[in-house]
Length: 144
Image (tube, rainbow, N blue to C red; front, side, top):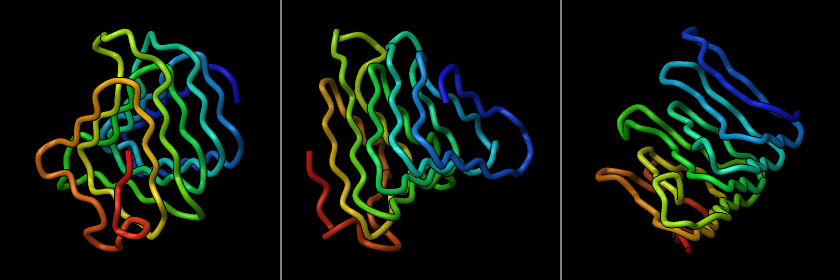
């Protein structure tokens, strides 16, 4: 899939991307849009728009690479990032010190898979962000 990916339907749904996603601009999922699952690698090529995934997200044994900021969740009490089907790598490739760089996590991150972060700018784990509250993430360690 190439182009813009936007999930802003306000109904309960579940989108599954079973193949590689390659987009020129950030991916957008609004609150209450339904769970989004990525089972293959994701490549966001430009930094003009942040990737904002504001609901439940499943990352299945893949690498999520973005030239712009990556935002996972916006409500620790409601948003979940589930790691499944293998180790997950999140890579932010661009750093100009701007507002659209880095990684922001405001969610519960769960799943018995390793999570590797390579972030060229700031990484923010919002107050209350939790790792492995239900199932330990990997061996219980988050490595940067």
